[in-house]
Length: 178
Image (cartoon, rainbow, N blue to C red; front, side):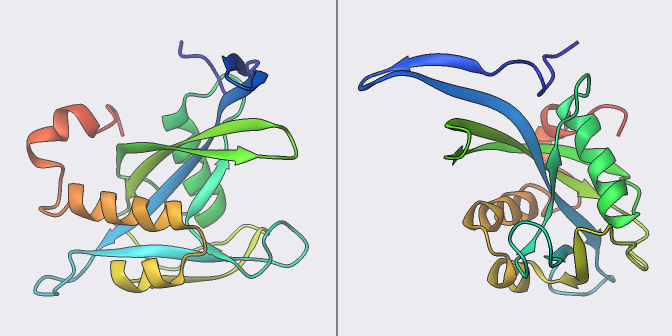
């Protein structure tokens, strides 16, 4: 089984520092729903606004969450989509890995980024951490999302799935069984 996110972070020696912690601990998921035939954009992107009382109140974001002990990143991505939106993932694609620094933990965190295709994009059932949602065109999503790394994730996902699937790289990027 792959190393879970809850495992101790790797410690690396770096110039100027004795050690720095690196941990794979979170997933970001671009949730995509197909548009009606004939539309210019093939995909709609789900964006959600952070509710008051938690981190980043009022910020618009994509699905984001921690990888739990014993979970693979793909399992965490599907679980987070369900928990945060009530939607079921039909297809899941590995997109990239985004590093970011958490100063409060002195850790470089790695977010495994996925695209989740959902077929039934009806009403979204938000968790308590969000208070609003909107399906947007990719361009509108990029303008709305607070985090620049999420802008890139949307661009990558829409580009890779521009024909409806990942084309010649489907066998590498599509997560089996999802």
